[in-house]
Image (tube, rainbow, N blue to C red):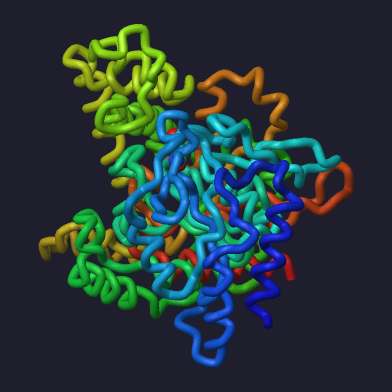
Length: 496
Ligand code: GLN
């Protein structure tokens, strides 16, 4: 009765922690899902997969046939998708059960899960039980995991939305390399950055879910083909004979906003890895400073284009109170004006401006250039060559740099996930948009480069003497997802 007991425990926790608002659509007390847990229980000797009969929560911007998909927006408050997203389909085929749809920042836009039409997600794990930020935008998924309301959860990470919530809730959050996991049925925010990620209490659970969703999908042409996957795997395995690992510390991440507890966690995790025999090396990623600005040009630009379809005619809940319900102009404006929240409207305006004829050269095009430079920065520090780049021409000079990179390049980077601990929800009320965007400074570079990145909790003593955790981020070369998870597992060892 193991699976049934686990499912009942999750269900009970969903009730106990209902006030945290982690779910927009929680599980129903009884339903066909219970029979599916019983079926999985019956085949426990020969399970379909490691998640057979387990409850996996799904962020509410990932389509599900049996539950609504709202993206935490008023404009989709009555929407139920006629199909499952590929990732949901894969998980269900493997026997997993959707544990409910989790709350988020509207359409994934935000860093604290406060921009939701259904109310903010609450995180009470801070000292004194004050409501603190659960991180965003996958804050509902992270709180669902941290309070035992599900076995593991799916989130989406465009600029840090899986890693930041993991860091703020003491859970593990993994954003795989871009293109490994299908986005078919995932409501688009910024297509070139959106990545489905996994949140869990331990890396082993993340591995189980990732193994099922990490596959090509003919319905999403941006997923990597089997041929490309095989090529990447052979390049990665070639370089993996070297131990100990070379761990890089990016100098530019040592900013003055880093709080002492984050600094302490960074040092202690580096010392710990060193004690395991790995070596530490400082590296420079000079374009890090520009990455945040570039992200906040590119993501809103893609968003403004993606969200143009919600007009109340073909997509989205129509504003039936519009002054002139028959004349297209009013209908369209008032549907979008009342259907989208403030932050989404801000991003649409920003994106429409940066794409406009007189601004595109100075904003969008420049930001694309910065994005390429950020990618080049990462490529210049990793020992493993980016497997997506065309094979190097054999010229003696290039061979020399390759040889020297084999000796001086690093295998992974280790840096904090966020500059400080989670702010209180109260302090966020007075925060400006730009202050909120600043929280993503350490997560967006890996997003711009499409690299695998993981946030893993590291224990620290807090001011009150209590044990807390700070999220540390492991970033790897494109396709080196296994190594990133492996280093995360080593760091998990710090918690005993
Ligand atoms: N906080 C970032 C933003 O608002 C990242 C969000 C995300 O990764 N979905 O765009």
